[in-house]
Length: 507
Image 1 (cartoon, rainbow, N blue to C red):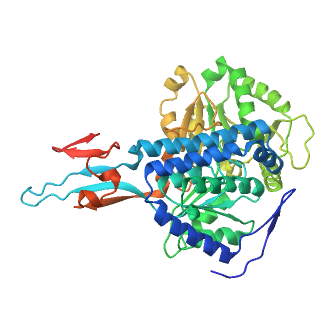
Image 2: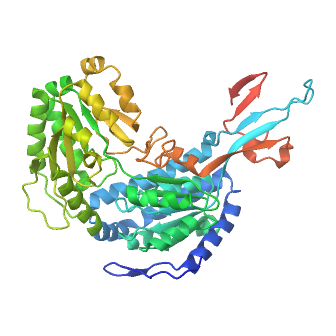
Image 3: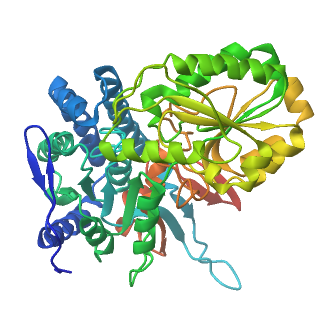
């Protein structure tokens, strides 16, 4: 475990952050495990107070943390202000759900000792936390998917301790948020190891965290290569653990002809903004559009290309993303049968995105897997189909997606019978006449999809439902009331399922 590894220093304008050493990781994981043993037994109200206090401390950082994030992530003040607000809302949403209680799926199946020929045991079941969760901060969301973001919030809500590896692109922002969390721990009397913070630009740091025997699960948002590597490592352990990697998506948009014939300009402007918002650096950016050849599609492309030309390029999150974007964009545009329709008229510096859109035919698309890959940045490919049969053929060649969108009116939906069912097999969220960007935090949101969008499409990372990634069902049989958890005791105030006279009822 203590094999030496090359030290990497991450530099920011004011501070240098050195990779956490393997002995330091060992100590952090042990503290996290000991804290988990205490934290898991805290009441829902205690955990909710802790999580709400994190939100308060994050807000108390004021503009200072936003200014650091602006410098590190090259994102504007308004975007970061909104993202911090979203992060605080997510934390409070988890806290509210904890206090309401039904997410635990507490279930009481009352015993019948007098039943013949065999007595029926008393069995009570609920979800319990699994242990320390390692979270890898994401590059494109310095707040919402990082140190106090969706994965840590869900893990704390589930009753787990959290070890966060700061993303090398914004280590100083992560350090400031980490200090806010530590203040919340002190204010609420939580065990200190309920949150541990480490740094690591070196692969060995991530590997050590995933392979550590005390790690119970992993949360990750980022590239397919990074997420799949963590998933593979976790399955090489003597005791495999779940890895919940959200690995991106082309988020295909299906443009049906009647809707486009009526409002091509509306949808073109809507999608120009969605493709290029944040320089296309959202995991739900629509990178693929599939339409049927018609006058409406021609008008849509005409307006879309003109809108794209007007988008000013901006510096991308970091050099690695900018270089990968240019490489993949060039790769797609060099493929046979692909035509560049439009790109920004503004000159782009080397680390700026190049807002652009290209098109190809359905025949070229289905025969060329290179065109199926995500280009992370302000780029989209439009696939022209001759008919509905070709559109369904394109669907059959697509992999799992976070989202799919259908632009259609009632006539389209009637004529395209079966299309929605085919599309629904691809994704975790299906949108009608909207855009996939802008993921609302709420009880019903699903942010995850079939592989390779996620390593486990049964779960999502947004909203309180995300807590269910970090729990397991546990049953108590024939326990006296005083030894049961509060959630399963007779007369508890939480909403639970009970079997009474062979009928399930929910209190």
